[in-house]
Amino acid sequence: MPVPPVPKENDFITNMKLWAGYMSSFLSRTPRENYGWLGHIYYDIQACAYKLRSHLNSTTLYERLIQQGHDGYVNDYVLPNYGAIPGFRVFSEGSCLDVINKTRRERASLLSMLLILQNNNYHVSDPDISNPAFSRECAYALMTFINVERTQRIALSPAQQARRDLLLTSSLSIVQKWKDNQAEYFRPFMGALTARALIMYHTHIQKDPRILPAIKTIAALCQPLFKEQDGPWGQGKSFFYTDRVTGSDPEDSKTQPDLNLLICPLFGWLYFQTKETQYRDLGCKAFEGGVSVYDQYGHHSYGAFLGTRSSINPSGKQYCQQLFWGLDFLAWAK
Image (cartoon, rainbow, N blue to C red; front, top):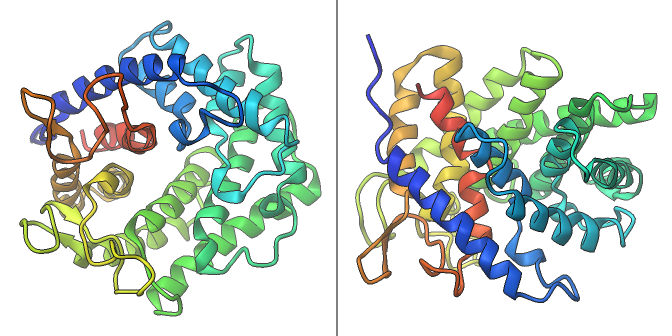
């Protein structure tokens, strides 16, 4: 029996195509000096443009945006700092896709990944790697090792393989600590980043039997934080930012539709793996709640806020959050 279509899929793709143009035009007018592009391309706009292009079965679309992502991140940030950058700013998939696609950027992109492996604390020896407070950094570091291996251009050293394996077990340990309430808090989007790293390992490295139960645990932690209706917490069909009030962030008790497309893919993957419709159903609701809606005057009214519906001031971070792995949900939910 065929599954129903994903709600608002066409609207989502239309938005992503429009904002790709807005972002490219915006960046072309924004100075690059002093990391001027860095905040606008956060969450790897280069990889996001590659994925949108692939989804549209093209080999040429969005080349300017891909180049801009490479320039702003690899050329302006990673290489000048020899890879010694904060762990929360480590993004490697755009560089990985440069190498896989054998572009003119591949040497610089491969070098950037190798410098991160060699000089970034979370990839070498940081002692806090299994602390849930650093789940994002642990996930990004694991993704770097996986993306380097995806290029098939260089073999990890024994020490690097051991570090990759430690990142895997640390990510799994963090999931268990979330489950056992041994963390200060749980945030669904942070759980989703860990889920993505684990799913990438399962897809590209090895089908570790611990990964499926871990993703189910993350889903179970996210589910009670999903609000289907609008309310004092904000928009419905969205997840609370945090599972408790921490006192450090006023958004803890609010829903965050901007983050829906970061979270719903883990439910799509669970449906793909198990065919249990409960996962697809919640994922589709979250997907629908995250699709941006702007009125005829360009005012935002629902879903993720993507900045201006123009090239005046689009929000690059929120745009990239939609494409970081949002298209994977569409593939897994079919």
